[in-house]
Length: 298
Image (cartoon, rainbow, N blue to C red):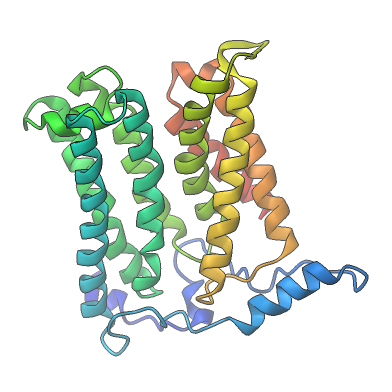
């Protein structure tokens, strides 16, 4: 299908759910009791703030050109952040493992913040996926040794070995690219997957290394503090993006979604704590768990 045909879809909220396996989320609003004023207030507030999904587009009258401009902006944001962490790694501002996790947390979340700049149809998702898609190519080239980039190796590897980029960092970039293309902005499953991968897994390592004295009985490489930090950070990031995307009209806030995000975050933290996550790669296991559980609960 050509890019022109991709933009033959309407960018209205109703038609945005036609893309791949999207399901409308706006109709799935939890039934709230009138005796609980806080959730009623929060839900009414989200309805008042609902705007058109095209509100943040740069050129709403020309979706293709607008998506091209949005791609340039999102790429600039992502690669500026990468450049920042490369400089901190080069100057030894943080130790290498912490620097790596700061990259892990920030890049995916910053990328998702740029999603409202794109159109709602499949063309917008494809243009948006180009940024992490380029990162996949970079990981392959640098990790294989075809392209020398010591700053990238230092900022993204644990031990300074370029071949590490062909594992965790490559899985990370691939996961975000596929989540963008398949789930895009109207799916809470996509929000949960990226939030738990970036914020959850990132903070699990940072907190676990500093406060993780009490180890889990079934995995001495993981700690209670790290698992709690992962579930909490993934859940809070999911809530933040729920309200963020709801403000643009992509989804509608509800307690049903809140509970679903909590279940997905706890399940992801549990799987990340298992020995199999270390043997495979938690970038894979966390993402697959988020998608599987999210498909069930949302």
